[in-house]
Length: 187
Image (cartoon, rainbow, N blue to C red; front, side, top):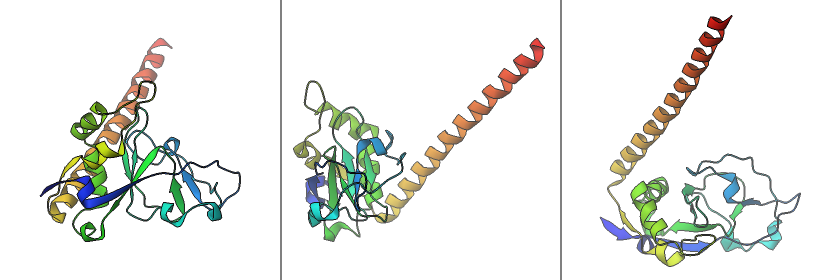
């Protein structure tokens, strides 16, 4: 099945807020993620819950899309603590009827695919800070295979990422080994 995102999900913007030292809600920002959408920073509750509208609280399975700047990625919200997304993100929430037919992780994978990243970046607007609009995101076409294929695609993607990580570790260790051999040869 092929469709566009607005047919299977709602999209809303994150909220603008000023973080405080001690709060009870996490304020997710782009700085908390690497370019692949993986969490790289620890979270600390830095907003007060009574200042946040219920509709802005993130739910398990929401897909966050970083739409501003050069670091565009999709990531699935799957942490236990209460959180809201900053204005750097669009929050994509699958419609109830699609929750059993589209995995949030698959949607994020699809949005992160280089082909779709090129489409999105090609339609970004702004001269100093490029930004992908909600309208562009809503019209992104998505191929939705059966759940079993989505799971298989995600597993292959995970294995590929693990392979890349292992190759980098091997390369680093090999470099250390060669550098040590060079030092030994000098001595």
